[in-house]
Image (cartoon, rainbow, N blue to C red; front, side):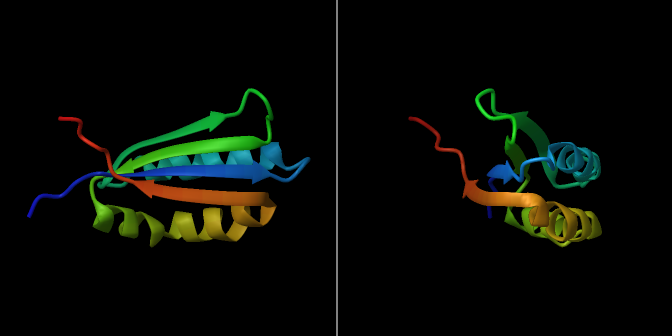
Length: 101
């Protein structure tokens, strides 16, 4: 069975006045996430139009690797426990690459 990478695009709208706190936590999450065996990349971007809008671009070897990421202590404690309460809005889209022929 062939496995395909899965890509995560997340758009976070940070509450006013909480950006530095979220960025500090997010740097910790990124550092730990990139050490996971199934992680292919973890990139954090900030909107040029609105500094409180963050875009995350992540890639995992396959769906089980993404599930393992979501089951880590750092995801549960930092993302779910500390970051999400500091967001106005959160949107997550899971994707696979389309190979043009």
